[in-house]
Length: 350
View 1 (cartoon, rainbow, N blue to C red):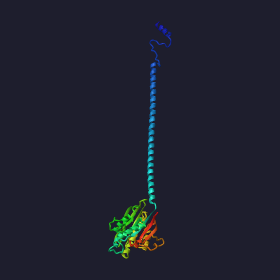
View 2 (cartoon, rainbow, N blue to C red):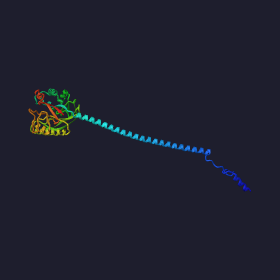
View 3 (tube, rainbow, N blue to C red):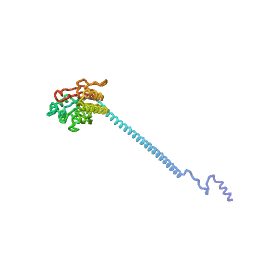
View 4 (tube, rainbow, N blue to C red):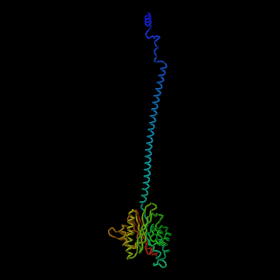
C-alpha cells in the first residue's frame, strides 16, 4: 500500500521537479562567476596591451639604436671625408707654395761680373818693385772702377788685407773669404753686393801658386729677391815659364775639374781670375771645360779664341749664361791703379 502511494505521488509530480533529496542544479551564469570572468578577461587584455606596448617600445628603442649607429657611422664617414679634404687642401697649398718658390727660383736675372788684379800693396810704395802709387792711393781708384763698371760681383787677385779694408770701406761690398782664412789669405777674395745676394756657402780648392799651395775660393750665392742660386769661382795661377808654366797648367786642369763638379748641381757657375794666359786659357780651359767666355770666341769647329787684344784676365761661365757688354777697361793701367785691366761684362741667366 505504501509503495503504491509512493508511486502515485511520483506519478503526480511534474517531470524535472526536484525532490527533497535532489540537490538544486548550478547556474553557469551566476553573478559572481560573471564578475570573475570579466576581471580575468580585463587582466588578460591589459597584459596583452602591455606586452604590445612593450614590444612597440622595444622596437622603437631598437630603431633609435640603429639610427644612432647609422648616424655615428655617417658622422665618422663625414669626419673621414673632412679629414681627407683637409689633408688634400694642405697638400694642395704646400704644392702651390713649392710651385711658386720653384717659379721664382727659375726666374731669369742679370748680373754684372768683373775681374780685377788690384796689384798687391807689397809691390808698390817705398821699396816696392813697381813704380806705382802706394796702395792707399790705388785702393781709392780700384773702388772707383768698381763703381764705374757697376759690378755686382768682382773676383780680385793680389788683394791684400789693407786693400781689402779700404775697398770694402768705400764700396760696402761683402767679401769671401775676406778675412775668414786669415789676413795673409785675402788675395783672391770675391766681392759681392750682399744687399742683392745672400751667401749660402763658401768652399776652397788648392793650386800651387809660384811654388807654394794657395787656396782658391768657391762662393755660393742666392738672389735674395727670387731665391735663385749660383756659384762664383775665382782663381790666380802662377805666372811665368818653366816650372811655373807647369804649375799654371795643373792649376787650370784643377779649375776645370772643380767647375765640372759644380755643374753637376745644375746651377750656373761664373769663373773670374787672372789666368796668366791668353789663347792657352781659352783653348785648354774654356774649350775643354765647355764654358763660355764673356769676350767671345768659339771652339765648335776648332779653337777660335776671342779677338785681340786678349788680356790675361777673364770672366767666363757655364753655357746657361749669355753675355753682353764686355768691357776691357784700360783706365786701370792708364791711371796707374794697377798693372792689369779692369774686366767686366753683363751676364744674363735665363
